[in-house]
Image (tube, rainbow, N blue to C red; front, side, top):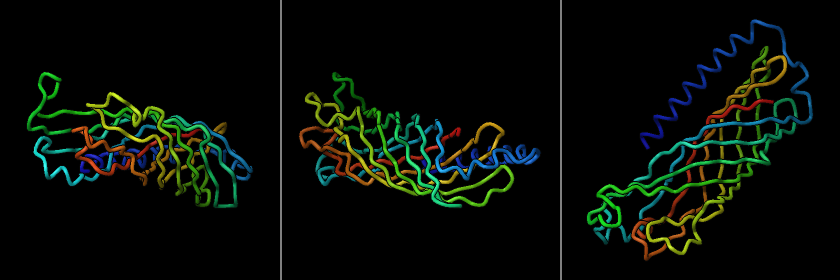
Length: 243
């Protein structure tokens, strides 16, 4: 958790510095794309970088056995690529979604083992990686401030459904795996800034996501899986959108 908090603070500082520089540059010129916000629909390409980890709970069996001493979730970096569709609802409200939203991540668990299987490639500290290629469908409500020159700030909140095309819940040979379900759903919240250029609008955005469903397909026969009960996803994303 300390690592995730550190990255959150870093992303916030970077985004604020970026916004300050761009805003100062923008205000030197005239008013760009004056009728942009009055259009009923907006479309854009979104590219982002994310930091993600698992929030999990130990199963009661963890305290009953001594083969696994410690389990920790490791933060990892991934990429996002999405197509934005934005519907204007009023002067300050918009409804947004991403019909095409791909997320590439590689989350991991670190285990401290008392009796590692050295022949099988294990050590006292063993890392089990979980690769993910997800297709998500978020629906977000966006609340925007008034436009100040070529700058505007907004907040978003919404829900999302997610399908992991690389999930391994159905894997048969899973002795060294942690099985995860394909479907997830959760909530999102974030903050963003619009910068209006003569030919496009650039939008840096910082967003956090909390998965609500239990991703873990627990198997009592697997030593890396049976010590864990529920698993939920946690993600923080910094992205740039060009409209």
